[in-house]
Image (cartoon, rainbow, N blue to C red):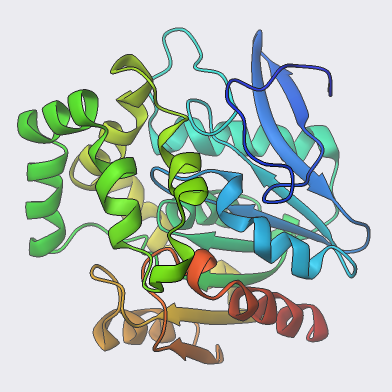
Length: 292
């Protein structure tokens, strides 16, 4: 593990005041944040975000726990491995390697967007490594009709063109997924576009929506093993203004998996709720920690 590698782009220190950590894996540098002391909390991002998404959550929690937030390969400050496919399974393997490297005791797992399937795949494979869960606006089952249509559009030829040529997810989807207008500052929005300066650097943002449709068997295998986690404390923190996940039917599906999980419904937050309501995400973590 090293700390002396140069960042590929810059973000203001007051916005992201964390020391850089790097795990060298197969000759490629995986970037992560590791701040604070105490029970470990693993914070997993989705598409097209990175550990920057959790900066305010980390700031709230750093005095009471150890916050670890990786950037998947090809996202944030992490490098793009040669020959990397950007599949969620590969991202999960990278996160698993980081867990093994840090030799963390059982973690509180915080997941949102693609962090859900990625983190929960690790959790059902290694339930003894998970102390509790905070689940935010995510899924881990095969796509329904609307998900399949979205995947066909954004993960098909048109989506590939839009992602690689126009950086669509970072330029348009991120700001549309933040509900509170005052939080969409130029500095914040630039932190989500700067990781993807070239068409080649954007491949991971295209593979994710394609995987909604192509990785159905993998998603089904995760959903089918969630019962292995039912003895853990679980909190659902849900942004109700989310265009994709702010639906009672989706909350009901998660409550069927975790019947004892309380739900915090946020009426003033959208898909990237870590931007809109970092206090609510941090609150979910604190409630899980209190139940350990």
